[in-house]
Length: 87
Length: 406
Image (cartoon, rainbow over all chains, first blue to last red; front, side):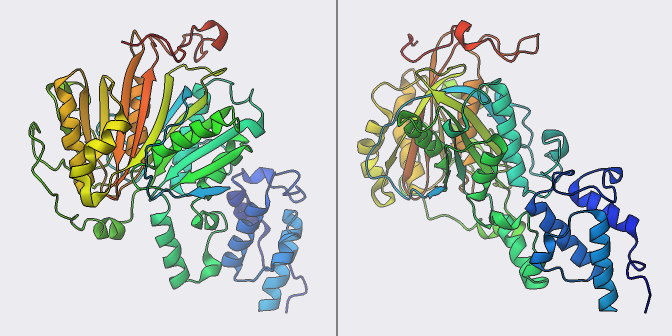
């Protein structure tokens, strides 16, 4: 098992996925940009992001966890942990 | 939110008038309101360029029909200048006619559920399972919080939306109403299932009908020599595509006649019910009061080959000897509601030097009739070179109800 739980998920791939779902240039999706306050993401779009993450990484994101999808950095940590657990 | 389904109106009901300030139209092969009566283009993939019609974020995942509606509404609202922005949100309303708009989408969702499971459904498109979601999204787009209504009657819903809007304006519920009709092409399987033959048409064809009766579904059937005009003689002028389905959206930005700006003119609508079982016998008793004893210079009649459509066509034929031109437009096979309201848009877009009366009649096979009366304002020039879409209301000399009619 890897010692770094985020090692298996490429951050730039994740950035590209989120940018695609948010209909934004990838450079606007910085590591710490807040999806809600900085990138004007509403709850419906957040759900779309969650669905796409589930499809791409074959993980399950609970409804409560959608609230924690606040920045690319936090999403990366969450997805990486779930991918690691699923191995 | 209220969904209104009007299966039948037993007696003629009259409502108030609306001032028409802006027009918006999105349809295959149509570049703007003036093209509204033109032959429909094919509902082929790519006919609608969403990225140019709806620039910005938040539209990509919407159902196509919702995009048509939003695009047409943007055109209508823009056509009206800044009048919507000057109207309080609680005084803005929307009446949206829909018939088959969600049919193909629902089929797609069914397939997704069957093949991959409900968890694969898109959160963005799933709300459109409810047909009222189209009007809701329209309201979100334009900050409409006064009311929104969805009307679902086959064929007649667009004109009924006008009637509902006029009633709401008369009641003081709104000072600006977007009246819309939107349809989406059916899926191939749905189109096939709706191509089943209708019940046989009863009675002989109208005596002066030039050409085959019943009218072709996607064509027009002129009833008078005057129909050799631009709308009837230049090919199949129905808004239905060659495969009999409709796609697109028509939107009218309306205000109260008193205090509003009748840039394109005024209109009102009313309805009636013609029992299919006795349509031929009852036509005069129903259509006479509905149309009144002073017909306009032109009536566009959206009719199908049902007993009701046939009876209405035969009754209208009596008008052709006078000054009234009747243009019969084949109702789309899918019984969509876009064609009648698209005709209204097209008639308002015509330029006249004097106030000119026009009308659109729509009839469904089930017997519902809707009739919109228009008084088109003199409008020699709409677009100003300075980029201002139209003169200010106060200085425009805008047409008002009660002005002299030809």
